[in-house]
Length: 561
Image 1 (cartoon, rainbow, N blue to C red):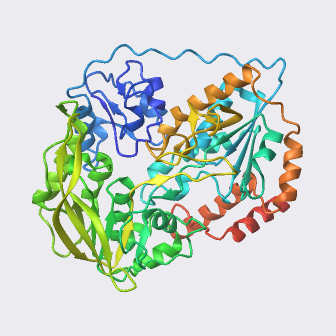
Image 2: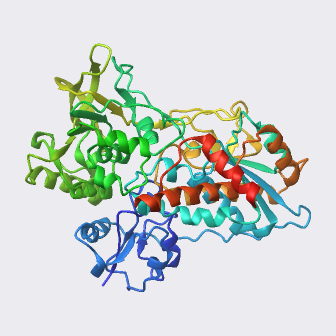
Image 3: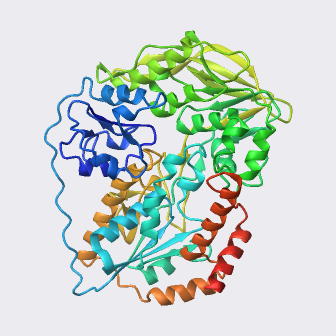
């Protein structure tokens, strides 16, 4: 028998640390970890001890005898990772974290801007390294914590959201403060944070989307997938948006996991969506949607697609939905380093199975289209169609494939176009971003001065704003640990300036600047309210989307204590 990692893997590698026979890979110390779709258990090396099951924060690991028809394929996916895999040199364990000396500096105070996974992992790393000798202050511009978990993860992926239970334990520590509904750069400045903390960690993600740069992109009916995801997940900034769902066909440009999330939501039946925590306004709008077909358009072939095998495989189990592929767009398996990459080959095989599967004509349809790039959105005042250009794959000298446009075009009628072609960071509180991915220039997490190239004293970064939009939720754990190592080194070496004020002075300052602030107890009151509404309607929760209502609930709870 062996254990198997399944779809909801978050990649935080908690399982790696407890495996007694080193049969879970890639580990955070191995090349490719940051780009891995998921983690994989070696079916030959696994001794069926079950330690990984206990350690997994999202219940993604199952014994092979507990696999269901929906998860059975993961036994093959796990085994595929180890095909053609060269033996690794014995892993070199990183040196153990040195005990932090606090004889001269009795306390380390750190501000974390952003309360998503990267920020929470950074806090947990600090707390595990230093314990009670550290105080952490979270600053979050929204009225609710945990960022991507609440507003990015698809509503039908409740298992993935379970990682929030780890962050809740971190948030409940006595030496952790939350300042929700407080925006750094508006209510507080960067200098305010450094006046009350030894260091500031920016964990603000990459909230801006990338444009297509084609004619017609500004037509009504053309949106970013970022906006659509935020809308159906109840983000307050997007809750009052409207999307035209009156046409029968929608087109999604891009073929990453977000594109597949959006496609699933657009064709899901009301009965399925009503079991999730999708925002009430989105549930109502989607219940009246007339969309019957969603095209997911990628510029390269199936093997090179950015979505992961688990997300792709899940499409085949959507009730009342066909997944179609045009045989002419099937291309050969990708080559990596001169050999067939087994994970990319697996994606190509899954797509080939979709192409060969029988279709029920009465079903809705997700059409996976490949080797196509958008050239123009067409319509008079609103989107009425899209022009796509056929690509061909060309092998570069290094063996990688790139898409080259041809003269062949295809016009497709549609009423909604959503672009999902990448994300970029934006400046926060005067800290600039740069480069193709608009990240904070940094060295292992130390933010660098753009003029001198030297580290900015006491300023650090984690997550997508540090490394660009890559990896999944758990990838942020190793990323955060790297940054915290640098911060602790600077603290020990005396490179951090002693803050002029402390915890109580900060609380008074925030209360004066932002009376509508919400602390963690206030969030727990909001959380309990949403869960209570959910129980009444048979859902995990019913999300509140109005910030004023959330402030009122949090304030009422504080008064009653």
